[in-house]
Amino acid sequence: MSGSTTLVAQGATDRVAEAAAEGMAEAGLHARAQAAFARYAALCDKAEAFAQAGDLDSAASFAAIAAQSAVRPHAGFYLATRLERLLVEIGRTALGPGRYRRPPPGSGRIEKVLHVGTTVGPVGGLRNLLRHWIAVDSGRRHSLALTQHSGPVIDSLARAVSDSGGSIYKLNRMPGGFIAWARELRRIAEGYDAVVLHLYSQDPTGVIAFADPLARPPVILDNHGDHLMWLGASVSDVVLNLRDAAQDLTIARRGVAPERNVMVPTIVSPTERTRSRAQAKAELGLDPNSVFLFSAARPMNYRTVDGVSFADTHVELLRRHPEAVFWVLGAGEPEDWRAASAAVGGRLRGLAESPQPQVYFEAADIYVDSYPFVSSTSLMEAAGYGAPLVSRFYGPKAAEIFAINHPGLKGSVLNASSEAEYLEFLETLISDPDRRERLGEQGRRIVREVHCAPGWMTFLERAYALAEQIDPVDPKAMLAKAELEAFSYGEPDRRLYEVFGLDDEPMAFIKPYVRTLPLAERVRLWSELKSKGAFSSLSEAVRHLAPEWLIQVLKDRRLGSLGG
Image 1 (cartoon, rainbow, N blue to C red):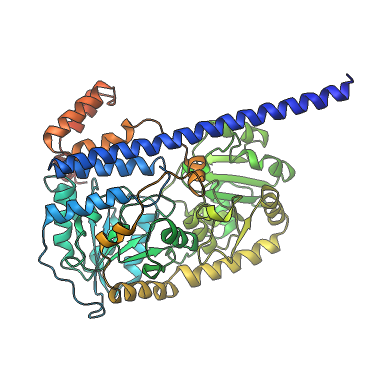
Image 2: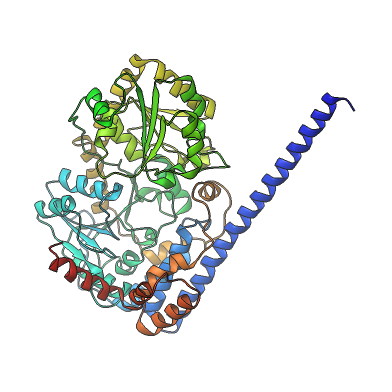
């Protein structure tokens, strides 16, 4: 056999081996995804068994655990029919009839709004959304109820609520668990004209609290976790979608009627430069003649896919352009980025998250979206400073929940559908400052018109008007028509596994819920987790044995004594 023939044969053998390895990996991923669905189903069984035995508090907690198991990792569905049916029954049974009687549709204007969240961190999109919404919607009074928040609420958000004339309620300071918190939430909501749910996907409090459609104000759900399974479809009169793909998924996979969906873009505050691009570069220690590429998101947004890291993709581009520097804020310093960074002399860097990222945005010549998971809020912020925007999505239309299709970004982002096109976009922008300037100004104008006040208020007023006028959703009727959960390995389900991976360790998502259980079941589950080594120290074990409400009350007192 000649040398060339040998090489051809060897190449074919290698390709067969690679294909076999990929097939085995795919089969393994599929099997693990199915196992995640089976684990969810088993937890549903357990929650339903508690309900049948009359232990509704344990049933609610295990419903939350089941929901958590379907969010991380994704369990192949978007509407948790079994859980929502169970939670509606818990709400109807445990809370009983309420005093509030909802006025007829269209009989009054929404003046007082109760926002309901699980928790709000010091950084992140939800904090910004709430702060901007409340500030811009200044003709209404806004309050905030938090179901599982720990510590104080960040000052800027607390001031926005106070300035509007509203109050902040921390429900998990009340003795009990999810049912007690839901009862208090329903009582608080009686004093408001509308409720907006910003809850985490797995939080059952909203479904329990608002299970009776006549004993609550209109409920609007903020679909901020639009790529995930979430609870609340059965109690939401209106679903507020931030983009086209989210609305499509809400209708097709969550069972929400088309007429109950409305589009309201993400709100951002108009950006105002505090320094020129040159000044910002100088502050960061960058060469004034460099072309600064910048990206900012959470570490998970830059997950390595099929052995190719986010950094690897840009090595050859940066080699061709020694004037280019690329920093990624929020990625940290991933181990598998080191070789790529070294290959371009450190001009490609991952940085830790910063609560003050403005100087980076002001310095950026080009803003590069995160991958494989996009970050629309970062794109909008970068657009506000006039940076041209580049994003990429290589999947089919059915998976467009992973792409940029937001109202104010569709016309202002260079959206690549292949890696070659993506690198071509970047190459052109690095080489052509006039094109950078032109595209940056176009994006700045469109984002300001759609995602900032006063234009944004037009979308919000439509959502309020729909919530006032539409008949309340009947949870039982809606869920009676819904199909039971079934495992799907199509799109976009399969892509969720690729982007976020699969966590096979159940103890990590069970632990936070131990403290929400009534005493007997809390001790039983705590003992089981302790025997499996779930707690890293004695102090952690002791903290998980105490009830959640007591832990939070003691923490508040300690922070109060310290002036925190």
